[in-house]
Length: 108
Image 1 (tube, one colour):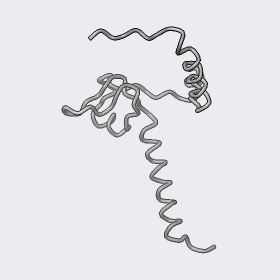
Image 2 (image 1 turned 135 degrees about the vertical axis):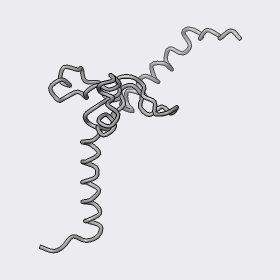
Image 3 (image 1 turned 90 degrees about the horizontal axis):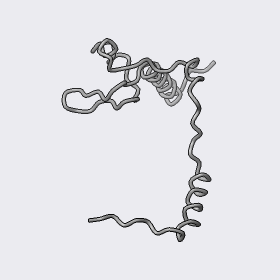
């Protein structure tokens, strides 16, 4: 078996880093908006790195919630992705009803 080329080694390294990122960000989500100093770091529902949760004890403070596991995710209804066909169909529907009622004018 031949040795890996530089490009193959870089790709393998990138895949290892990607897997580490997935593991780091797949455990917790923000339960509330979280700020670090005066900057908004995570919005509600954003994935939060496990290292932050451990370091700052955000789980004990109630700032984060465990991310859904595959078993609990099955209880959540799936949301169908928006397709270009759905967007065009919605636009066609709006275009066909555009002349029926004028939109109310905003008072200035």
